[in-house]
Amino acid sequence: RPDPYRHDWQPGDPYGEIFTGWSYPPTDYGKWEELVYRWVRHSVERYGREEVESWWWGVWNEPDIPYWQGTFEEYLKLYDHAAAGVKRALPTARVGGPHVTPPNPERTQRYLRDFIEHTIRGTNHATGETGSPLDYVGFHAKGAPRVMDDGHVRMGVGTHLRAIANGFSIVREFPELDGIPVIIGESDPEGCAACPETTNPENAYRNGTLYSSYTAEQLARTYQLADSLDVNLIGSVTWAFQFEDQPIFYGFRSLASGGVDKPVVNVFRMLGLMSGHRVAAPSTGGIPLREVMWEGVRGQADVAALAARDDRSATVLVWHYHDHDRPADAAAVELAIDGLPEGPLTLTHYRVDGRHGNAYALWQAMGSPRPPTPVQRAELMHAGQLAMLEPPATVPAENGRVELAFDLPRQGVSLVRIAW
Image 1 (tube, helix red, strand yellow):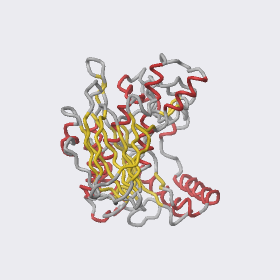
Image 2: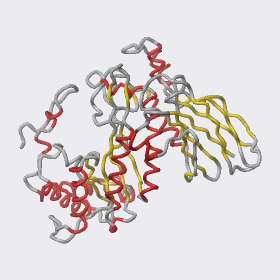
Image 3: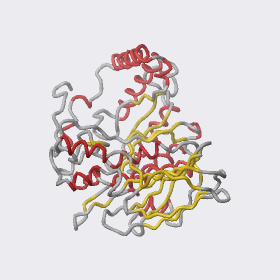
Image 4: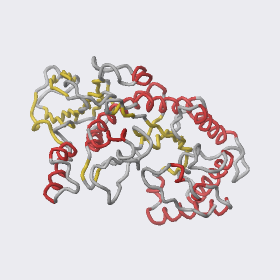
């Protein structure tokens, strides 16, 4: 269907207008396979075999909805020929899918399950043999924010986590896939990255600390789900973009706006400072995983932690999260870290809250200038960097333990790092 091929969708338009000619099956699957083959071969020539072997190739995006205007069987044909092209160019390349939408509805669960069944026991459309290459399983997961009657935003982390649990559970139904890598190819609080708060008021969460605390909550719970279901989770992708030539803090799903980092990116920076192996981090202020998954965080707030240790440091990520973005008292946190070496230790405490690592709050205090002046922009860029709550300090470990006490505002996130 070549006309129209390219869409001209804009935020606020009906979303169905995006599914133009690009979303239809090819008329010649042999040419499609050849295109994929040449693209992979080009990548190897340009970047080197070792580099491309580290990549994870996927076929299409969310074929279970109108992003794919073909049938299910036509998607399988598309996948088989694409996988054949990838493997012909580089036999050691890794290819998988199907990157369906969040597998909460039964129809999406069936799509994911039937796709896996085809790759194991179906007839390959490209080779005629049994089965198709499947080096990883990919699916998407999203939350469900909404604007409440009084105007505040309520997030839907439970919906997000149920999608992840459902995807993991389907993978575990197939003994042949034991240990297969799993990638959550999109894992976000909701579905439309290109929908700003002007057209979708529920997306107002994206500029402030609700996005950053949600990210900490969701990623830590994703690890718990992977552990409980014995799934080899190797990646979780935020489907966030840089939208060019747009007003600053306009509410797109991005990690930065107009070159100014948002609070959410500082949670990723915190996670980047955690290394080694995860260790137990129980919390008396934490909510059980099953309750968060089925009821969300709608009653008491979730004050919990994710911790790791390597040979030279221990790190603890602590968050104070609630689905409802309303003012509340800070949490009084008492943190005890055991198993530390004796001798002087260096304590560094990073923070994302209303006053730390938060360029959006500063922009609001400036009067929300659009655009900011060059001086204001420089101040905003500085405010968007990961900030310390206080300067690094030397602390002793008594019997291998360090105890700390601090207040953590609602929707705030702390990273405590102890190095030696």
